[in-house]
Image 1 (cartoon, rainbow, N blue to C red):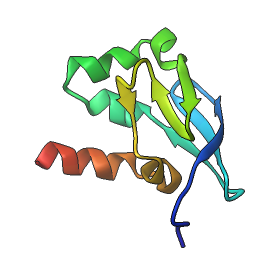
Image 2 (cartoon, one colour):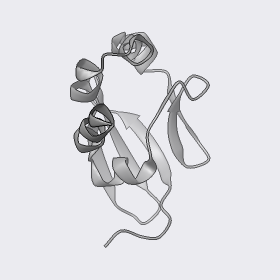
Image 3 (cartoon, rainbow, N blue to C red):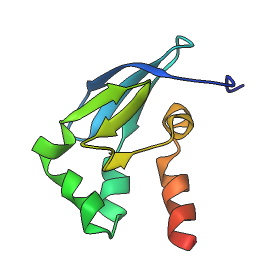
Image 4 (cartoon, rainbow, N blue to C red):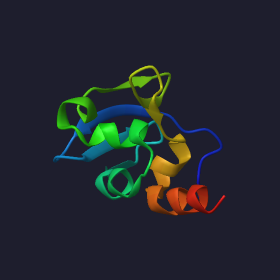
Length: 93
């Protein structure tokens, strides 16, 4: 069951486009962002395929963000490791 509110408490790169996330409920998840970034068609998203830009993530208020929120994901999607499903829904809209 998903907690009503979830925050990321730690993020560590674990491979080229993989980030291990630790959540405040004690669980962890390793998310592979490469499929999402590779399938993106928008240049503002694809720019994060550059390794130096991808590595520049940070935690802010329990969320994983890049730049000035140029790239961010709902924390619940990261918790569920469901980026591909979210991407597919966004492309269909």
